[in-house]
Length: 129
Image (cartoon, rainbow, N blue to C red; front, side):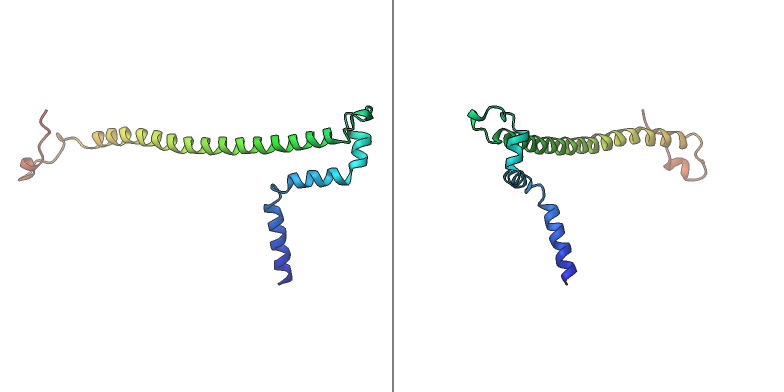
């Protein structure tokens, strides 16, 4: 039972990872604030601005938002491509198959070569043009 709980917890974390990205960015910022202020901040040489690493945090949040938007756009594009591909591929095959069947049917059956014995010559007549 304990193993099942661990697996369920792992799968839950795996599924909810996308929603937890922004809180992880904030957590990373808070845990490494001193390092970010002294090494990664754009305004580290201008202490009078009191940026305190907020520029770095804004960049990271903007990057996460762009990644999410790009993924959503990619998903929508893939969905539209699949939909259009299914619709037009099936339509093309349907239109392509109909004339082939008709041509094959025409070539395989000729009224002139039908047997004319007894009552069959009265039943099988050529079409009236």
